[in-house]
Length: 424
Ligand code: MTE
Ligand code: CO
Image (cartoon, rainbow, N blue to C red; front, side, top):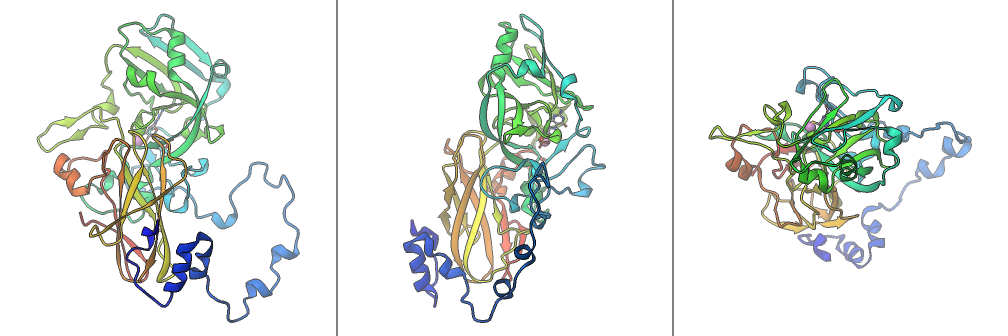
């Protein structure tokens, strides 16, 4: 259990960290400075101690503190020609735990976010079924529902980093991901209601947005764990996440999670639409393309410290944290290195460990103030280990955009400033 102090140099503070090791409650002794001069934050009355605060109902739908205004999604202007078919990114470096708050879940739209009146929304099931059906939202509310926490990662997440380090911040390199609790109807119940024919092997979910997003999904997955979801983190889906209903395809690439779901066609073979031919395929060096690469491989990233979240406290006790996930199961283990992979330490996992969900890890260490080369390496419950970027390029060449799950490196200098670099 003491591995977090491994590599710690004996210092004038070592008796304090020794005490810290003995009980978590005493960690503060190593980081809180003794008070020498009077501190106006203590000795002077603050406005909020003198004046009454807002009454209840000042904000019928609550917003974060105004001191948290910087915790927002951000886009990268040069990535797309306009903001209609575009992307913004989850501020991973500002979050903790495993749940992404609804207001900062990254957005990816191909024709903007459709603004749908739920009373006018219909979900149709047609094709190789016994009964073609149309559901209103009211109809859907009468099916049994389930709750599950799943990550959604765009297959293009980290895609800009294939050829080398590019974007300076985990928000931009890894922020095409969110992790929320969905409430939804198992898709298999709706398909059973329609009655699938024996030759039905695929489904084609379709969005009601102007892009009419469609993807072919094998029936096996449709009958396994897919959900037709209408709530995220307990409240209605946000408009930008597909209100009033979206498809949830656990562990599989985000593109398949059709938002503003209006139709599910049942067929006997895949449709080979745009999003599974010209897009979401990986061109290899030999000219062949990998297709139908649906499962998201295990991946991790250190969110703090990182370029947008430098170390500002100087040498001493330091909390490193990050997230890891796998489309194939849970993440029982994450390794962390401070020296570019010369030595690895097992990180401490904290919080629920749910299949196809984000996991949180921490690694506390005594920073000696010297430069760091930080990396994290996820192991998933199938035994798969997150590869280096060099390994990925060896397997798949340099033409790829999608499915970059290589190990990320942050260089932290003596001032605690972090930068995106590549060393392996
Ligand atoms: N569904 C529709 N109808 N239209 C879209 O543009 N974009 C897809 C998918 N579903 C898209 C869609 C892509 S590429 C991704 S990564 C996810 O939605 C993004 O989901 P989010 O906006 O909730 O993050
Ligand atoms: Co996507």
